[in-house]
Amino acid sequence: MIDISALQWSCKPFAALSVAELYQILHWRQRVFVVEQACAYLDADGLDPECLHLSLCNPQGELLAYARLLPPGLNGAEPAIGRVLVVPQYRRQQLARALMQRALDEIAQRLSSVSVRISAQLYLQGFYQSLGFVPIGTPYDEDGIVHINMLRPIS
Image (cartoon, rainbow, N blue to C red; front, side):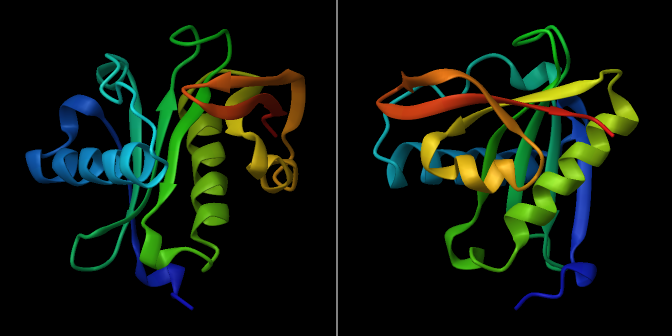
């Protein structure tokens, strides 16, 4: 099990990302969402420049987990968390839970809102419910993967 306290958190606007940081983020987003999930879609959707980018890295600067934080009004009325990933070799070590908790903290501190939205892959609904998210609406297909919208009050 990884000692999360020995890892480094970073939450930056797009313009503050270094070229190396951006490359790692895009590499892992493509590797997980396009290759691993066999889903051909446009990852570079034009929203990144308006978002905060939350990264968890080891002391050597290698990306272990990532999430994109969308401000309110960019893709819905509430702020949203998207592109949530944990690098495959670091899964099942509670990094996804730590990442989501940190994402919620960052949104509470930086973005003015009473709730946060996610578009969750349906098979992860239970995980997100354990973090306080509630399903809204019915499941839908997004790029060949069943998703469900979920909402969580910010405490």
